[in-house]
Amino acid sequence: MSSHHEVEMESLISSPNLVSTPRFISDIDELQNPIFEITSPLQPSRQRRITIKVLLDIALFVILLATGLWLFANVGRSLLLKSFGDAFLITGIMLAILSIWLVLTGASMFRKINLLKLIAALIVLIIGLSLILMGNKENRLAVGYALFATALLILITKFFFLIEDEQIRIERLERELKKAKQSAGMGMALSYFYNFIVPTAANIRSMDEGHTPIDMEVSRGKFEEYQLTTDQLFVIVPRDLDGSDMKVFLKNVSSSPNPSVIQGKPKERPGNDTHRPMFVYFLEWDPAKKECNGLFDIPTIISACWDRRKHGKNDQHDTINITDEIMIFQNQLLSLINEHPITYGKVRILSFPSLPFRFSDIKYVVTQLAHGAALE
Image (tube, rainbow, N blue to C red; front, side, top):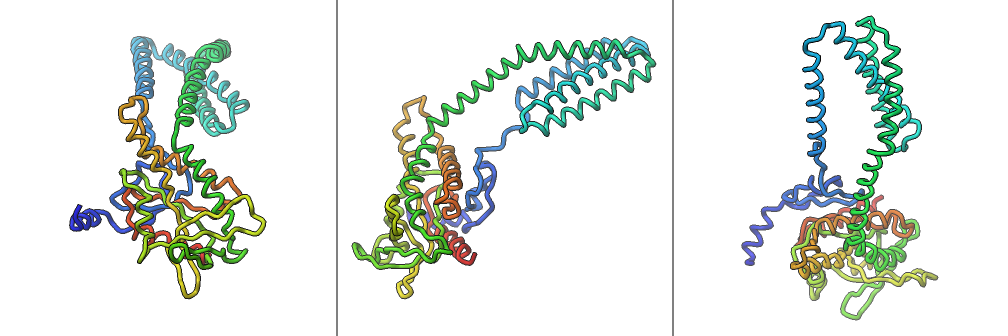
Protein backbone atom coordinates (compact mmCIF):
# COMPACT_ATOMS: atom_id res chain seq x y z
CA MET A 1 0.00 0.00 0.00
CA SER A 2 1.40 3.40 -0.93
CA SER A 3 2.07 6.10 1.62
CA HIS A 4 -0.68 8.20 0.01
CA HIS A 5 -3.26 5.50 0.64
CA GLU A 6 -1.96 5.01 4.19
CA VAL A 7 -2.50 8.71 4.90
CA GLU A 8 -6.03 8.46 3.48
CA MET A 9 -6.80 5.46 5.69
CA GLU A 10 -5.45 7.15 8.82
CA SER A 11 -7.46 10.28 8.05
CA LEU A 12 -10.66 8.21 8.28
CA ILE A 13 -9.84 7.42 11.91
CA SER A 14 -9.72 10.20 14.47
CA SER A 15 -6.86 10.88 16.84
CA PRO A 16 -6.73 8.73 19.99
CA ASN A 17 -9.82 9.20 22.09
CA LEU A 18 -9.57 8.19 25.74
CA VAL A 19 -13.00 7.07 26.91
CA SER A 20 -14.42 5.33 29.95
CA THR A 21 -14.71 1.56 29.94
CA PRO A 22 -17.85 0.44 28.09
CA ARG A 23 -19.83 -2.50 29.39
CA PHE A 24 -20.46 -4.12 26.02
CA ILE A 25 -18.21 -4.53 22.99
CA SER A 26 -21.19 -3.65 20.79
CA ASP A 27 -21.18 -0.15 22.33
CA ILE A 28 -17.72 0.63 20.91
CA ASP A 29 -17.65 2.97 17.90
CA GLU A 30 -14.36 2.06 16.24
CA LEU A 31 -14.52 5.08 13.88
CA GLN A 32 -13.98 7.29 16.94
CA ASN A 33 -10.69 5.46 17.62
CA PRO A 34 -11.64 4.80 21.26
CA ILE A 35 -8.93 3.75 23.68
CA PHE A 36 -9.88 2.86 27.22
CA GLU A 37 -8.55 1.18 30.32
CA ILE A 38 -10.08 -2.18 31.17
CA THR A 39 -11.37 -1.66 34.71
CA SER A 40 -14.27 -4.13 34.58
CA PRO A 41 -14.99 -7.23 32.49
CA LEU A 42 -16.32 -6.61 28.99
CA GLN A 43 -19.32 -8.48 27.61
CA PRO A 44 -19.88 -9.33 23.92
CA SER A 45 -23.15 -7.49 23.29
CA ARG A 46 -26.38 -6.38 24.87
CA GLN A 47 -28.81 -9.23 25.29
CA ARG A 48 -32.07 -8.80 23.41
CA ARG A 49 -34.72 -8.18 26.02
CA ILE A 50 -37.55 -9.83 24.08
CA THR A 51 -36.81 -13.35 22.90
CA ILE A 52 -38.99 -15.77 20.95
CA LYS A 53 -39.85 -17.57 24.19
CA VAL A 54 -41.03 -14.31 25.78
CA LEU A 55 -43.19 -13.57 22.73
CA LEU A 56 -44.71 -17.05 22.93
CA ASP A 57 -45.44 -16.54 26.63
CA ILE A 58 -47.18 -13.24 25.86
CA ALA A 59 -49.17 -14.86 23.04
CA LEU A 60 -50.32 -17.67 25.36
CA PHE A 61 -51.40 -15.13 27.99
CA VAL A 62 -53.41 -13.11 25.45
CA ILE A 63 -55.10 -16.24 24.05
CA LEU A 64 -56.10 -17.47 27.50
CA LEU A 65 -57.35 -14.02 28.53
CA ALA A 66 -59.36 -13.52 25.33
CA THR A 67 -60.91 -17.00 25.58
CA GLY A 68 -61.92 -16.41 29.19
CA LEU A 69 -63.52 -13.05 28.38
CA TRP A 70 -65.42 -14.60 25.47
CA LEU A 71 -66.85 -17.30 27.72
CA PHE A 72 -68.08 -14.62 30.16
CA ALA A 73 -69.62 -12.49 27.42
CA ASN A 74 -73.26 -13.35 28.17
CA VAL A 75 -73.30 -13.67 31.98
CA GLY A 76 -74.85 -11.22 34.41
CA ARG A 77 -72.98 -8.54 36.33
CA SER A 78 -73.26 -10.30 39.68
CA LEU A 79 -71.88 -13.59 38.34
CA LEU A 80 -69.19 -11.72 36.42
CA LEU A 81 -68.00 -9.92 39.57
CA LYS A 82 -68.06 -13.16 41.56
CA SER A 83 -66.15 -15.09 38.90
CA PHE A 84 -63.52 -12.43 38.37
CA GLY A 85 -63.29 -11.79 42.09
CA ASP A 86 -62.70 -15.47 42.78
CA ALA A 87 -60.12 -15.65 39.99
CA PHE A 88 -58.16 -12.64 41.27
CA LEU A 89 -58.50 -13.73 44.89
CA ILE A 90 -57.31 -17.28 44.20
CA THR A 91 -54.46 -16.05 42.01
CA GLY A 92 -53.45 -13.40 44.54
CA ILE A 93 -53.42 -15.86 47.45
CA MET A 94 -51.39 -18.41 45.48
CA LEU A 95 -48.86 -15.83 44.28
CA ALA A 96 -48.59 -14.22 47.72
CA ILE A 97 -47.89 -17.54 49.45
CA LEU A 98 -45.31 -18.57 46.86
CA SER A 99 -43.66 -15.13 46.86
CA ILE A 100 -43.41 -15.00 50.65
CA TRP A 101 -41.88 -18.47 50.62
CA LEU A 102 -39.33 -17.37 48.01
CA VAL A 103 -38.42 -14.29 50.05
CA LEU A 104 -37.89 -16.41 53.17
CA THR A 105 -36.08 -19.38 51.62
CA GLY A 106 -34.90 -18.25 48.18
CA ALA A 107 -31.36 -17.32 47.15
CA SER A 108 -30.22 -13.92 48.43
CA MET A 109 -29.21 -12.77 44.94
CA PHE A 110 -32.89 -12.96 43.90
CA ARG A 111 -34.27 -11.24 47.01
CA LYS A 112 -35.16 -7.97 45.24
CA ILE A 113 -37.00 -9.64 42.38
CA ASN A 114 -38.84 -11.88 44.85
CA LEU A 115 -39.97 -8.81 46.79
CA LEU A 116 -41.27 -7.29 43.55
CA LYS A 117 -43.18 -10.52 42.89
CA LEU A 118 -44.69 -10.29 46.38
CA ILE A 119 -45.83 -6.71 45.78
CA ALA A 120 -47.45 -7.72 42.48
CA ALA A 121 -49.18 -10.65 44.21
CA LEU A 122 -50.59 -8.36 46.91
CA ILE A 123 -51.96 -6.01 44.24
CA VAL A 124 -53.75 -8.91 42.53
CA LEU A 125 -55.07 -10.06 45.93
CA ILE A 126 -56.44 -6.60 46.72
CA ILE A 127 -58.19 -6.45 43.33
CA GLY A 128 -59.79 -9.83 44.01
CA LEU A 129 -61.03 -8.79 47.46
CA SER A 130 -62.45 -5.57 46.02
CA LEU A 131 -64.38 -7.41 43.30
CA ILE A 132 -65.82 -9.92 45.78
CA LEU A 133 -66.90 -7.14 48.16
CA MET A 134 -68.58 -5.37 45.24
CA GLY A 135 -70.49 -8.55 44.46
CA ASN A 136 -71.44 -9.08 48.13
CA LYS A 137 -70.48 -12.74 47.95
CA GLU A 138 -69.05 -15.15 50.49
CA ASN A 139 -65.35 -15.76 49.79
CA ARG A 140 -64.55 -18.58 52.22
CA LEU A 141 -64.82 -21.24 49.53
CA ALA A 142 -62.55 -19.24 47.22
CA VAL A 143 -59.92 -18.93 49.94
CA GLY A 144 -60.06 -22.66 50.65
CA TYR A 145 -59.81 -23.44 46.96
CA ALA A 146 -56.82 -21.09 46.67
CA LEU A 147 -54.98 -22.82 49.50
CA PHE A 148 -55.71 -26.26 48.06
CA ALA A 149 -54.66 -25.17 44.54
CA THR A 150 -51.45 -23.65 45.92
CA ALA A 151 -50.51 -26.93 47.57
CA LEU A 152 -51.12 -28.78 44.30
CA LEU A 153 -49.14 -26.17 42.37
CA ILE A 154 -46.16 -26.53 44.70
CA LEU A 155 -46.30 -30.30 44.32
CA ILE A 156 -46.49 -30.17 40.53
CA THR A 157 -43.85 -27.49 39.98
CA LYS A 158 -41.48 -28.86 42.60
CA PHE A 159 -41.37 -32.39 41.26
CA PHE A 160 -42.15 -31.98 37.57
CA PHE A 161 -41.72 -28.67 35.75
CA LEU A 162 -38.99 -27.12 37.88
CA ILE A 163 -36.93 -30.29 37.59
CA GLU A 164 -37.12 -29.87 33.83
CA ASP A 165 -36.03 -26.21 34.15
CA GLU A 166 -33.17 -27.28 36.39
CA GLN A 167 -32.06 -29.80 33.79
CA ILE A 168 -32.12 -27.10 31.10
CA ARG A 169 -30.08 -24.80 33.34
CA ILE A 170 -27.53 -27.53 34.05
CA GLU A 171 -27.27 -28.30 30.35
CA ARG A 172 -26.58 -24.62 29.63
CA LEU A 173 -23.94 -24.42 32.34
CA GLU A 174 -22.29 -27.56 30.96
CA ARG A 175 -22.10 -25.98 27.51
CA GLU A 176 -20.62 -22.78 28.93
CA LEU A 177 -18.09 -24.73 30.99
CA LYS A 178 -17.07 -26.78 27.95
CA LYS A 179 -16.67 -23.59 25.93
CA ALA A 180 -14.56 -22.01 28.67
CA LYS A 181 -12.30 -25.07 28.89
CA GLN A 182 -11.75 -24.96 25.13
CA SER A 183 -11.08 -21.22 25.13
CA ALA A 184 -7.66 -20.21 23.92
CA GLY A 185 -8.07 -16.82 25.62
CA MET A 186 -8.22 -18.37 29.09
CA GLY A 187 -5.02 -20.35 28.64
CA MET A 188 -3.16 -17.43 27.08
CA ALA A 189 -4.12 -15.13 29.95
CA LEU A 190 -2.84 -17.61 32.55
CA SER A 191 0.42 -18.13 30.67
CA TYR A 192 1.05 -14.43 30.06
CA PHE A 193 0.18 -13.49 33.63
CA TYR A 194 2.40 -15.98 35.44
CA ASN A 195 5.26 -16.01 32.92
CA PHE A 196 5.54 -12.26 32.37
CA ILE A 197 3.23 -10.02 34.41
CA VAL A 198 4.03 -11.44 37.85
CA PRO A 199 7.85 -11.55 37.39
CA THR A 200 7.84 -8.00 36.03
CA ALA A 201 5.55 -6.52 38.69
CA ALA A 202 7.50 -8.31 41.44
CA ASN A 203 10.61 -6.31 40.57
CA ILE A 204 8.88 -2.93 40.21
CA ARG A 205 9.07 -0.87 43.40
CA SER A 206 5.98 0.99 44.55
CA MET A 207 6.29 4.77 44.72
CA ASP A 208 6.74 4.81 48.50
CA GLU A 209 9.71 2.46 48.08
CA GLY A 210 11.49 4.83 45.70
CA HIS A 211 12.34 4.56 42.02
CA THR A 212 12.94 1.18 40.41
CA PRO A 213 16.49 0.71 39.04
CA ILE A 214 16.44 -0.43 35.41
CA ASP A 215 19.22 -2.10 33.44
CA MET A 216 18.60 -0.20 30.20
CA GLU A 217 20.03 -1.54 26.96
CA VAL A 218 21.21 1.76 25.46
CA SER A 219 22.85 -0.04 22.55
CA ARG A 220 23.14 -3.67 21.55
CA GLY A 221 24.75 -5.52 24.47
CA LYS A 222 25.52 -2.31 26.39
CA PHE A 223 23.56 -1.55 29.57
CA GLU A 224 23.32 1.51 31.80
CA GLU A 225 21.35 1.98 35.01
CA TYR A 226 18.24 4.17 34.76
CA GLN A 227 15.56 5.00 37.30
CA LEU A 228 11.90 4.24 36.56
CA THR A 229 9.91 7.20 37.91
CA THR A 230 6.52 5.42 38.10
CA ASP A 231 5.28 2.07 39.35
CA GLN A 232 2.84 1.33 36.53
CA LEU A 233 3.01 -1.30 33.79
CA PHE A 234 0.64 -0.76 30.87
CA VAL A 235 -0.52 -3.78 28.88
CA ILE A 236 -1.77 -2.86 25.41
CA VAL A 237 -4.36 -5.23 23.94
CA PRO A 238 -5.88 -4.80 20.46
CA ARG A 239 -9.59 -5.55 20.16
CA ASP A 240 -9.09 -7.55 16.95
CA LEU A 241 -6.29 -9.02 14.83
CA ASP A 242 -5.63 -8.68 11.11
CA GLY A 243 -2.81 -11.17 10.67
CA SER A 244 -0.01 -8.62 11.04
CA ASP A 245 2.84 -9.65 13.31
CA MET A 246 2.98 -7.73 16.59
CA LYS A 247 6.53 -8.95 17.18
CA VAL A 248 7.59 -7.29 13.92
CA PHE A 249 5.87 -4.08 15.05
CA LEU A 250 7.80 -4.08 18.33
CA LYS A 251 11.03 -4.91 16.54
CA ASN A 252 10.56 -2.00 14.12
CA VAL A 253 9.85 0.62 16.79
CA SER A 254 12.79 -0.55 18.93
CA SER A 255 15.36 -0.88 16.14
CA SER A 256 18.43 1.34 15.85
CA PRO A 257 19.64 3.88 14.92
CA ASN A 258 16.63 5.97 16.05
CA PRO A 259 14.41 3.72 18.14
CA SER A 260 11.00 4.98 19.24
CA VAL A 261 11.09 2.74 22.29
CA ILE A 262 13.92 1.28 24.33
CA GLN A 263 14.25 -2.02 26.15
CA GLY A 264 15.45 -2.72 29.65
CA LYS A 265 14.74 -4.90 32.64
CA PRO A 266 14.17 -4.01 36.30
CA LYS A 267 17.00 -4.95 38.61
CA GLU A 268 16.15 -7.94 40.74
CA ARG A 269 15.04 -7.10 44.25
CA PRO A 270 17.44 -8.21 46.99
CA GLY A 271 16.33 -11.61 48.24
CA ASN A 272 13.85 -12.04 45.39
CA ASP A 273 15.04 -15.26 43.80
CA THR A 274 11.63 -16.44 42.59
CA HIS A 275 10.93 -13.84 39.90
CA ARG A 276 13.73 -13.19 37.44
CA PRO A 277 13.59 -9.79 35.70
CA MET A 278 12.02 -9.66 32.24
CA PHE A 279 12.81 -7.30 29.35
CA VAL A 280 10.16 -4.62 28.92
CA TYR A 281 9.67 -1.55 26.72
CA PHE A 282 9.91 2.13 27.68
CA LEU A 283 8.49 5.05 25.72
CA GLU A 284 10.50 7.79 27.44
CA TRP A 285 14.10 7.86 28.58
CA ASP A 286 16.44 10.72 29.46
CA PRO A 287 20.15 9.90 28.95
CA ALA A 288 21.16 13.00 30.93
CA LYS A 289 19.05 12.34 34.03
CA LYS A 290 19.16 8.54 33.61
CA GLU A 291 15.40 8.40 34.11
CA CYS A 292 12.72 6.52 32.18
CA ASN A 293 8.96 6.30 32.01
CA GLY A 294 6.14 4.80 29.94
CA LEU A 295 6.67 1.15 30.84
CA PHE A 296 4.50 -0.99 28.56
CA ASP A 297 4.13 -4.35 26.88
CA ILE A 298 2.09 -5.88 24.07
CA PRO A 299 1.05 -9.51 24.72
CA THR A 300 2.15 -11.02 21.42
CA ILE A 301 0.89 -14.37 22.71
CA ILE A 302 -2.62 -13.46 21.49
CA SER A 303 -1.35 -13.83 17.91
CA ALA A 304 -2.01 -17.52 18.53
CA CYS A 305 -5.73 -16.75 18.04
CA TRP A 306 -5.03 -15.76 14.44
CA ASP A 307 -2.75 -18.72 13.85
CA ARG A 308 -5.32 -21.08 15.35
CA ARG A 309 -8.06 -19.78 13.05
CA LYS A 310 -5.79 -19.78 10.00
CA HIS A 311 -4.79 -23.42 10.48
CA GLY A 312 -8.31 -24.49 11.44
CA LYS A 313 -10.16 -23.11 8.41
CA ASN A 314 -11.22 -26.55 7.20
CA ASP A 315 -12.36 -27.76 10.61
CA GLN A 316 -16.08 -27.09 10.93
CA HIS A 317 -15.98 -27.84 14.66
CA ASP A 318 -13.14 -25.39 15.34
CA THR A 319 -14.71 -22.00 14.72
CA ILE A 320 -12.59 -19.22 16.20
CA ASN A 321 -14.05 -15.83 17.08
CA ILE A 322 -10.94 -13.74 17.60
CA THR A 323 -12.78 -10.80 19.16
CA ASP A 324 -14.37 -13.08 21.74
CA GLU A 325 -11.05 -14.82 22.47
CA ILE A 326 -9.34 -11.46 23.08
CA MET A 327 -12.23 -10.37 25.30
CA ILE A 328 -11.89 -13.59 27.33
CA PHE A 329 -8.12 -13.04 27.49
CA GLN A 330 -8.32 -9.50 28.86
CA ASN A 331 -11.22 -10.26 31.23
CA GLN A 332 -9.31 -13.19 32.71
CA LEU A 333 -6.11 -11.13 32.84
CA LEU A 334 -7.95 -8.34 34.66
CA SER A 335 -9.29 -10.83 37.20
CA LEU A 336 -5.82 -12.29 37.81
CA ILE A 337 -4.25 -8.83 38.18
CA ASN A 338 -6.85 -7.67 40.70
CA GLU A 339 -6.61 -10.84 42.78
CA HIS A 340 -2.82 -11.11 43.03
CA PRO A 341 -1.09 -8.98 45.71
CA ILE A 342 2.02 -8.48 43.56
CA THR A 343 0.17 -7.11 40.53
CA TYR A 344 -2.78 -5.31 42.11
CA GLY A 345 -2.48 -1.56 41.54
CA LYS A 346 0.67 -1.89 39.40
CA VAL A 347 -0.66 -3.28 36.12
CA ARG A 348 -3.23 -1.58 33.89
CA ILE A 349 -4.81 -2.97 30.72
CA LEU A 350 -5.49 -0.64 27.80
CA SER A 351 -7.87 -1.63 25.01
CA PHE A 352 -6.78 -0.36 21.58
CA PRO A 353 -8.48 -0.57 18.17
CA SER A 354 -7.72 -3.44 15.84
CA LEU A 355 -4.29 -3.96 14.33
CA PRO A 356 -2.23 -2.49 12.83
CA PHE A 357 -1.17 -0.33 15.77
CA ARG A 358 -0.48 3.35 15.35
CA PHE A 359 2.61 4.04 17.41
CA SER A 360 1.61 7.69 17.91
CA ASP A 361 -1.56 6.51 19.68
CA ILE A 362 0.38 4.20 21.97
CA LYS A 363 2.88 6.89 22.91
CA TYR A 364 0.23 9.53 23.50
CA VAL A 365 -2.03 7.40 25.69
CA VAL A 366 0.64 5.60 27.72
CA THR A 367 2.68 8.73 28.45
CA GLN A 368 -0.45 10.65 29.45
CA LEU A 369 -1.52 7.94 31.87
CA ALA A 370 2.02 7.34 33.13
CA HIS A 371 2.55 11.00 33.96
CA GLY A 372 -0.86 11.10 35.60
CA ALA A 373 0.14 8.13 37.77
CA ALA A 374 3.41 9.85 38.66
CA LEU A 375 1.55 12.94 39.83
CA GLU A 376 -0.69 10.82 42.04
